[in-house]
Image 1 (cartoon, one colour):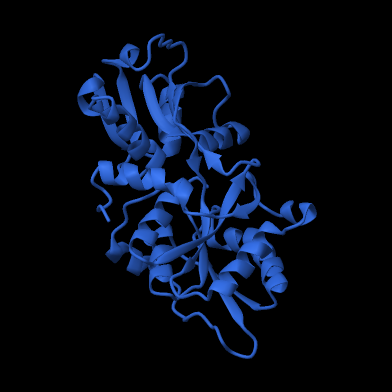
Image 2 (image 1 turned 180 degrees about the horizontal axis):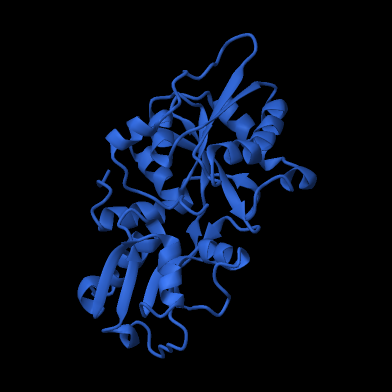
Length: 291
């Protein structure tokens, strides 16, 4: 969850990082669904340990075998889905939007986090800083955004400011890009910057892990709800199997959902409409070509 909000990746890096070589197996006497995952946990081995039991249940519900592979990085998963080396994967919302725009992915499910299908971009302030009139009260303050490959750490807040005629690079007195999500939260908590961007789930995870305290920084702005991660399938994955995958994930029992790593709590049927807001932001900022 910590590293999922990326939307710019070079194809060369992706291809170099991909470790998924075998084509998906479909149409044989014993069908097999090939699931590819990015290293969502600290290591590839830990990712497999956490997610394989879930997808084993799903495959059994579908009546198929399971071939689960964990790639080196998130970019490798995008390449694997586009080249149809895998049948399905979990993708960040913007990664899904880009893959869909190129005709490489279809949504099966939206993932629930703490029971919700949405999350929010946030801006946090250093301890003791009060801003009574947002955003004008923040004019001239220092701002640390994440790199331009972050959905909630750059794209969403940048779009919000520009829609109001404010250019972040000149609106703030000292403006910087490129921090990691954790570094930005800590910089605000330590008073190194006045303001920093991020997203609520990541901040809550840092609080839960004890990296920061609830009062280490203060949320001074949050976006409207944004759609969560998806489970997406390759372009030519049979529709009846996409539906079977969706139903198997949505149909996990309460006991089976306990196997999900925090903060995931389940799945709901996915549809594209909630993700249109990200498409519009991408077009407005010039990072997604108009269809």
